[in-house]
View (cartoon, one colour):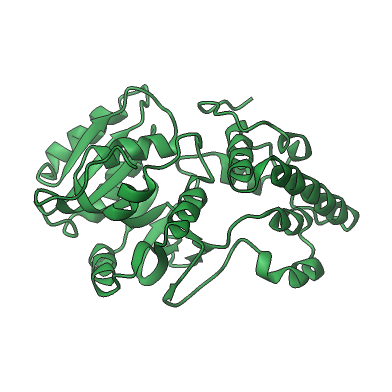
Length: 320
């Protein structure tokens, strides 16, 4: 059961939750892209300042007032920064909506995307979580639909061997799609529409994940409960990526990732596969790492061989 109250006649049609942590400029740009797409009072936007510790919330509030967005947008200030899942939960519980749209601060919503997502949900009652097409500013597609991570996927991802990848093609996490698709494993929570009944039955996001893996974990719980997940590429959202987290940049540069990433990974594997499954995932990752290293193609970042063994302890963003 969720702490969230059930739907009622006072619920708005759409509640958009934008999470901010020291990215006020990006949030203002995101809100500007929503201008004209959000129709008050039936649709509302909540910006959650995740205890930035600077003047982010004030800057965003000032922009809302100065640009005339106060009819449809407001700022909620979280007293702590407990991570991505917890911050989004603050937003979800602060607004009574039939559909929630979780939206990263580093996004720009293309014209018509909100209407397309809402129309799709109306036309497809069997779809309960819906992801748009994520793309770069130049329109280049970003993969935003995925298969679940399993112990076997760790072998493939650590090796980066094409031949092994072909053998394990069905276990590659990234699942690139360019057309409407339903019955998916999971979609990126950089932008996702979630029906209220999912939250009422599955609950809020798991706050044991500080950042990363929470979207995949939530989708697994939702599909277990019988809810459907789909992808609507006609709704387009620019995702700048990395604006709110250093993990993607660290991965690209093969630098060490923050420990909250590995704590989240460990929590995910132990939640869905138990301790033996977590150990199997790590052993298969090491095998893949060794195979890839022999060919000079390992997908590992610095110290990853050691960091994967951390226990699934919530670290409040520890980067040690």
